[in-house]
Length: 69
Length: 474
Image (cartoon, rainbow over all chains, first blue to last red; front, side):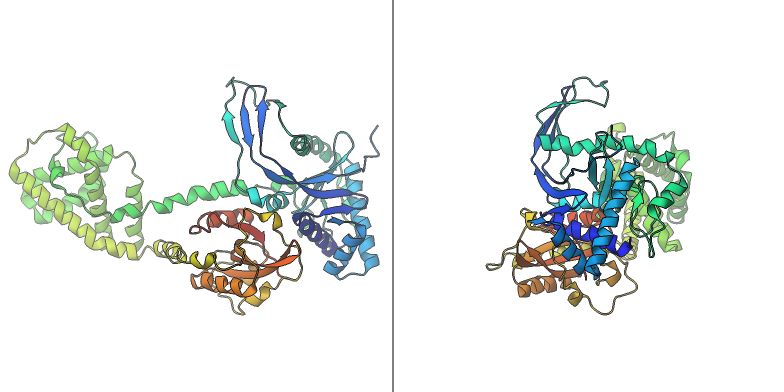
C-alpha cells in the first residue's frame, strides 16, 4: 500500500466529511457528521453539567469481528 | 450528498493521479488492513484521521483523531461543559454514572472512548514479527498505517498516547503569556511622595536586603555624607516597604530589564527604580504604623533625597524601555488593525461569520492560494506566525479566516488592508454549498491550538468573529 494513497484517502475523506457529505467506504462503513444539541447531563451524585453543542463524526459499520462468539 | 464507492474512487483518482484499477486495489488493501488489524484485537490509527477497532461487541468502531474532531467542531470550538450543580457528595468517586436526559447520540459517541482502554492491554501480546507482518513488507514506498502505540511510519502514523490535545498545549502556552503584560506599570507617573517620609523605626528584616541597602547608602553618602543616621532610617523605610509588598512581581520585571543593558548606569537605575516602587506602595502601611515623630529637617532631606532618586530613575527609565523590544511590536498591530473592520460590512457581499459555518470546509481541490504567495520569503522571520510575509513551507498548517466573501475583488481588497497592517494574508476560494466563496485568512500556524490562541488575540471584532481552516495549496 502506498503512503501517497493513504494520504489521499485521508484527505478526501476529511474533506468530504467536513463538507457534511456522507462517505460510504465499501467494506468499512459510513462516515457522517451529526450535530449534537446542547443538553444537560445528570449524574447519580446530583452533579448536573451543561454540555455544549457539537458537531461530531459518526461512523456506522456493519462489519463484525469474525472472532466474536 | 452521499459519496458512494464509485464517487470515492473518482475522487481518489483525481487526488492521487493513479490509475483507477490501482486505486481500487489500494483501497481494498487499506480496508483489508484495517479489518485485519482490528481482528487481531488492535486499534489501527491513520494519523490525523482516526482510529479503527472492534469494540467489545465485535462491532467495528472509529474514533476520529483530535485534528479531525476539532476541524469538524470548529463552530463550537472553545465551548466547555459548564457545571450547573455540583455533586452532592464531595467524597463521591469520580466514576459517577450518568442517569438520564442524554440524547441517544451522545451516549453512542461516548461509547468508543469508554471501550478504548480495553484494547490497549491486548497490544503487548503482539510480537515484532506480527507487527512487521501487518505494516510492512508489501510496501515499496512506505506504509502509512500503523498499529496503535507503534510509531513505524514517520509520514503519517502516530501513536495514540503521544497525542496531546490542542487544548492542553494551549493551556501551557497561555500561562507564559500574561507575564509580558506585567511590565507596563513601571511607566506610571510619579505620585506625590511627601507622605513617604514617615519611617519605621526598627525593621527586623533590614539585614535581609543588604545589597539594595548598600547601593542606596553608597549613592547617598556622596551627596549627604553627614546624614548617615537618616539614611539608615530611610533604608528602613524602604526595606519595610519591600517586605510588606505583597506582590513583588512588578519589581523583578523592572530589575530584569535594565540588567539586560549590562551597563553601570543601568545598574544604578535598577536600584533607583526598585527603591522608588516600594516607596509608593508602602504608603498606607507606613502611615498606620508611626506618627510624625521625626525632625522636620530630616523630613525635608528625605523628601529631597526621594526626589533625586525618582528623577534619576525617570531619566534612565525611557532608555530601558527603548531596549525592550517585545513591547513595541506586539502593541502596534492591534492599534492599526483596529481601523480595519470598518470596510468589513460593505455592500451586498455576505460576510460569512463563524455563526453559520455549517458551510465551512475545504471541499475543492482548485485552491489558488499560491497566487498570494510572494516569491521571496524572509529568512529571518519564523516559519509559522501571524505577522510578516507568507512562508511557503508553512502552508501545511492552519490559518484564521476573517472574511468569507462572494466576490474575489472584495476579498483582495480586505486582504490588502490586512496585509498593510502587517499580517500574513491568504486568499483562497472554497466551494461551499455549490457556490464559491473567497476566504481571507491571516497567519500560518503549525497547530490549531496555535491558531486559536492567536485568533483570540486579534483586535475586535476579529477575535470573536473568525474560524480556523487548514491551509490548502495544491
